[in-house]
Length: 130
Image 1 (spheres, rainbow, N blue to C red):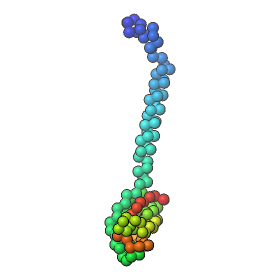
Image 2: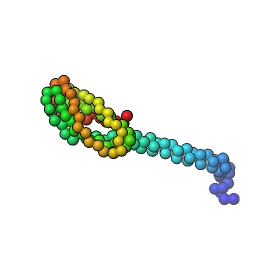
Image 3: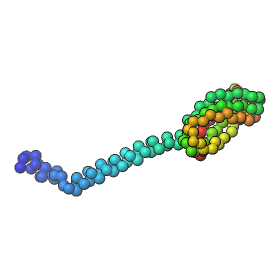
Image 4: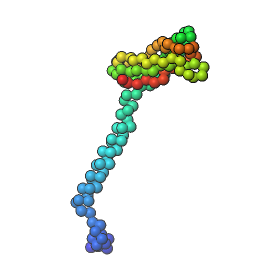
């Protein structure tokens, strides 16, 4: 018996089958937790909607026409909040529009936003999957 083996035996540093099992269980639990963390980071991106405002036109003092496009999950209904703002970035018009499910990921639309005062811009505030 070598000196290292004698010291291991004397101070209880030998590996038993139980300690090997505990090490394997700890590694397994760590792998499962890592997988859950990775899924929690990736899963929300499956339901995201990317939107871009492409144009706006102030038709008159009570109307803005807004052009925009979005890409989202296929086969899911998407809703968008559209808004019109005045020169001081105050919201003078607001509308939520729901678009039915489609087999196309990217779609373009033009919508009219009624306003309470003359607007200077129109934009898409947000889009989401409903």
